[in-house]
Image 1 (tube, rainbow, N blue to C red):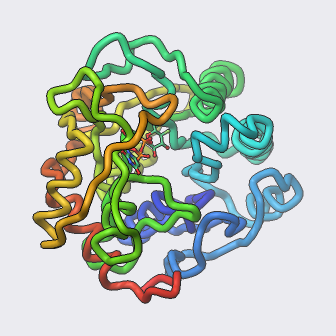
Image 2: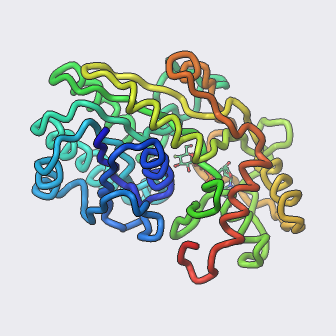
Length: 329
Ligand code: UFG
């Protein structure tokens, strides 16, 4: 298939672009490099530097060849920033996606796989989370992703778009060969921060609250390996029919607490990783983990990395192996 990957220089997008190239697809990456990295680009893919909101550029890209589908990763993803600057998120995530959808409609591109998030559920009534639970996000980031899901449903009904929303839980880990991995600026995610402590780049990790109603008092998340995310994207785009909207939770089904992540990192790195309990971070639901059975049933997909130690181990290989000057390996 000929596929356009927006945000293909970002963390999840670059691992997906790689998996799509591995599977023999012809890939064009569109990325403005505002958060993505040149070193994360797959050399087998054609790279176009630019913004999804640039309608003229999108037309030039889509005019040149007949695309079978789009995998759409380009988005801002910092929850805290989305609270402070909501319009930046609505502009980039929602308006940018509308521009992309208009271009797809006008060029007859009918298949889309979209990076959605478990943040669209807000605080779920119970765990594990199934796809039919109410979507009631508690921050602007989650609301932009939910607004896009509605734009996809409505486009499916109105002009035959075939769309698959993949609601990721916590993306984690790095490529098995250590070539690419997670690198956000600033970094706010638990696993990279913990590994920066092990590398001596930070004195300790702060635990955001240990008085949650969970067995060890710290928040529980579902850490899904980025290569498992890549494989479900490939399956989703290959199987997507025009005119249909589908949504899947993408997680392991296993909940892991903050303390368990830190313990896994201690055992993988051999570093004591000092931890300091700090106040709760606003907007953190106590427990989020997926019921991934719908993806297993309908797509035949299942996470290969189910053990948090394997996830941390792969992230560690990447963090330890890369030059310490901020570039990739
Ligand atoms: N945490 C700490 N200390 C830190 C960083 C994180 O204790 O220094 C905790 C958080 O409180 C949370 C867990 O570790 O309980 C995971 O936090 P992350 O920031 O790594 O990830 P989030 O669960 O906040 O965010 C992820 C995605 C978001 C998405 C969100 C949905 O990264 O894009 O899930 O809830 F919106």
